[in-house]
Image (tube, rainbow, N blue to C red; front, side, top):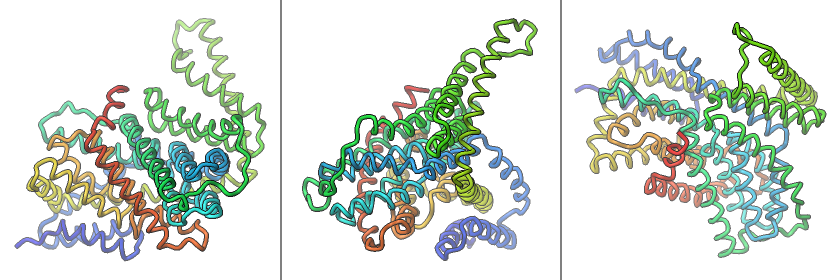
Length: 516
């Protein structure tokens, strides 16, 4: 009887990760061990290792994945420049006078920060240090308050732009192409990051609305859990509200608009976001206001003008008009560069950029190390026959395509208790998704369903990352048990959202079809 080395390999990976070893080293160690064991037993060809270099090179030069460091930098700069604090404080004063109002403001700020930073840790820590103490001072149930903060932070994984959606778009596109090859199609379609972002917008907003309705409903049924603010706070003026909301909203429109409008690729749009975040941070740290605004306006005009009327001076028929336009474009570019330099000087002076670059390197290294080692793991897993075993298991399940999808969603949900979204995305999904697409499931709809499921992995005890971030930022009186109890109803709401998206596929498919 042949040992099921592929299944043993997957089980061994989960055990090693649970033992606390670094994820990337765990993946590489398990893959190496089972490759050597499979070779010794005569069921694995070590010649497959020759494909590793090409796989690694493909990951490192992938134009979609290279957007990740820039999106991370954008989020970290916004977090370090304390824009989140100003937004939270303003929204708290705006909604605090109503029952559950502080909770509503936490969810709205979570959604705005999610769309402008896409980083769960930054959002949870910021709100854990600012909003959670404010809610506790005003009599909120500590379990509800901690659950709201932890959950609001995870919105950064479903509301674009987010690293989860970028990784998921690449994984789903590869799986979709693989499924089409297996169907005998050689003129294949792909899934772009823009389509994935568009598909996630409505479900992300739906999830935020579900959270807010739950908070307001609980505040109405149990007033003591979410009372109105006891502290006297002056309601912000329209100008203050606009000043707090406008920067992240403008950044969101610039990044998403560039991608969804087809004006820029994901890494170009991420560059726009990173530059915009640096300009905003510079403005807050004392850079000349007039220069920052003039620079931002110049870069915006330059982007649209160069796209609508590009100038090519190397052409033989270039005349005075082209040279005049080139001079105008150069002037706009110089103003923009001057603003960026002024912003960088201000942020370096306050130490913001040094801290932001360091954190960006750490987060990016972690993500790419995991992706590279997952590519190694999947090569060994496929070489041991695991790909065919997964397809056979899904096809043999009762209920046909629906039964297979239910099993896949349940499996991802359970793994979310133990593994991070990056590991699940780059190790498990390339094996699960192609058979599901071959069974007839729409890949865009499937991507959003999986994204909401993976988002849940940040909340599920005992290893939910959002829970760890909040534990580090929460006041001493909030215990780990309170945090676990607080997120439980929100996990149930996540499941309800998944059921709604499953039952109403149009929630995730109509916008990408409309735009693309």
